[in-house]
Length: 119
Length: 110
Image (spheres, rainbow over the protein chains, first blue to last red):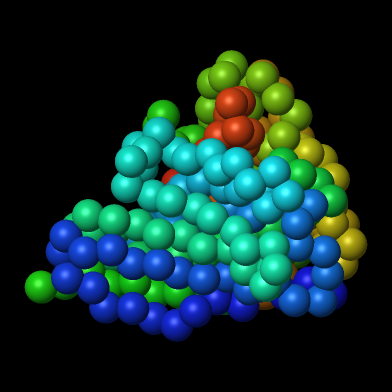
């Protein structure tokens, strides 16, 4: 069974960047998409963007264009999400999730990474 | 793009049914049969409950069912059980390799 394991919690200053990793184990990595979804405290889910590793072409939510970068390393089955110019509103739990056998849904989720932006 | 619209809360007694709506537009829900639903318990990652409007992943009880009419999708939980108390989120493909989520509905089992 595929598992997605994310990197640990981060505390960042406003204006800085954060890079969160998501390592897949137990199955095929390259042929499925990996999306990133965030959830601010007490709020709903927000889709941020995705990548299909074997194509290596990312897509981003319009409101995050220019600040987010999603990459994938096929050799280590790891996806990355980097968010720059951080502000307090970026404080959230960040999840990676797989678009699997049903490619338009998200069937496997990482455990989440808390990113806190505070001066 | 605005989030899909869900009621903030819904409730029912054990054994009853509850239905949650999710309203979008012709550019998302109405344009594609790619609506999915997720259950999230406090402090946990979301879990896929329904995909492609009506399909259930292996292991999801058949008490959970989905439907769609026009620009509105619905999730029905029949035979409510205590463990169904959670937040539920809808999601839809919105074209051009973009996805949207609803604001979430908190389901309370009375």
